[in-house]
Amino acid sequence: MTSKSIFSPSWLPSYIANLLKARHCWKKLGRCRTTCKDSEVFYLLCSDETKCCVNPKHVPVKTRSLPPTGSLE
Image: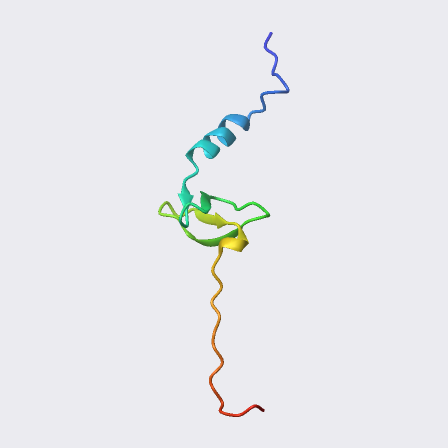
């Protein structure tokens, strides 16, 4: 008789494999994943076409300058 342990779910080996093979991206501030965590944002693609998931505080924000108007109005 074979019994399955509740402490060894079937998804655990693939989950551990994904953790071990997760590569860094974006200057080592992000991780290449198929799905980003809720606390991460997708910024760009990794070389294997997975998402580079980065903490939003590390994503650069482009700001634009207002053109000089020559007046205070």
